[in-house]
Image 1 (cartoon, helix red, strand yellow):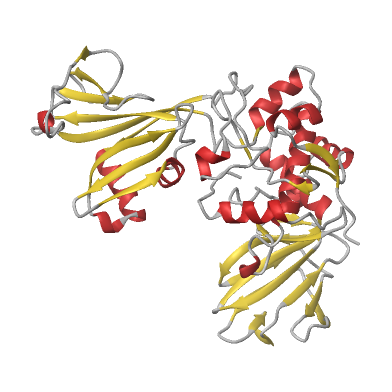
Image 2 (cartoon, rainbow, N blue to C red):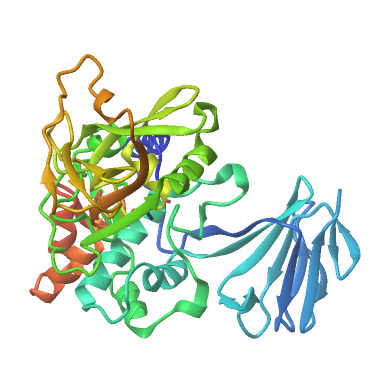
Length: 426
C-alpha cells in the first residue's frame, strides 16, 4: 500500500465517522483482473460455472481442464459460446481455482463492462489475509512483526470495503490497496500470524482506523497532515526503528530529457519542462511541494505526486540539478533554505566535493547567473520507501527483534489506537 492521492482524504474522513460493520466471516471482493479481453482458466476441472444475471445463481456447466472466457460486445462467451451479459460465477471443484498461474481460494466472478471483462476473487476475510501478509512483508521476519502486519492489513481491509465499488469489487490486488497474491503466496509463518490474530483490528474511538502502512520512513514517520493535508489523531509523526533497513538510504538520477518525458506524461499542458524547484518542505526533509516550470505554463505538485510520477521510493529526499556545459554547476536544495547550495565541478556527476559558489541570489532575477547553462541531470538522495504514514514495516521488524510484541508495535506507530476485536455486524 504505497500510492495515495488527495482524494484518499475524503475516504479517511468518511471512515472516521462510520463504525466497522464486519466480522471475521466477512466476504471480501478483490479485483485481480480489469479491462481484460479474455480470461484463461486452466487446471480447474470440476469447477462449476454459474450464471448470476437473474440474481439467482443458475448452474450452466462444469469446466474442463482448460476454459477460455472472452468478452463480446453484449455477451460473455465461454469457449466461443455466448452465455449472456452475466455476471458469471465460478465455484471451485475439489481443488483451488487457478488463473494466471496462481491458485486462489474462494470463488471467481466475471463481469462484462464496455466490452471488457473484470475478474474478481471473492473469499472470506481471513483467507484473503493469508494471501496479503506474505506479499507485504517477508515471511522469515519475527512472528511479532508478522502479527503486526496481519492486524494492520485486517484493519485496512475492514475500513476500505467498497473502495472500488464503482468497478465492482472492494479492493484491488496491487499496492494501491494491498498487495495480494492468492493462495500461491501463502506461507506457514504468515498463516500462523493471521490465525493467531484472527479477528483483531486497530480501533480509535470505537471505530476501525485507517491503518496505512509503508516499507520504511527513513528516520521519522510522517504526520498525515503533512502528506495528505488533513489531521488524523493516530497518524502522527514518531521516530522510526528503520535505520538498519537496506532501503533506509537511496539515490536515483535522471538525465534531464528523461525527467522531461516523465513530467510530460502527467502534465502535458505545461510544455517541455524547463525548471524544477522545491518550494515547501515537511517537518523532516520530505519535499512537500515542487514547482514545475514548463515552456507553456507552470504547476505546483505535491511531493507524493512527484515521487509517484518519477518512480521514486519516497518524497523524503534532497534534490540536485546539474547545469552544463562544463564546468558543470550543481545546485543542492537542503531542507529549510530559500535558495540552493551551489557547487562547481568538472563533470556532470553531482556530489558534495567541489568548489562552493556564492551565487548572487539577491539579483532581480536570481537565475540570471546561469543564463549560459542548461539543466542536464537531476539527482535525488532520499530515505525510506513509501508515503511514511502509519506502520513502518522495517521499523516493526526491528522492534520485534528487540522483543516488542505486536500490540506494542502497533500502538507505537498508531499513537492512541488500540488493538481490539472485530465487532459483530449483527
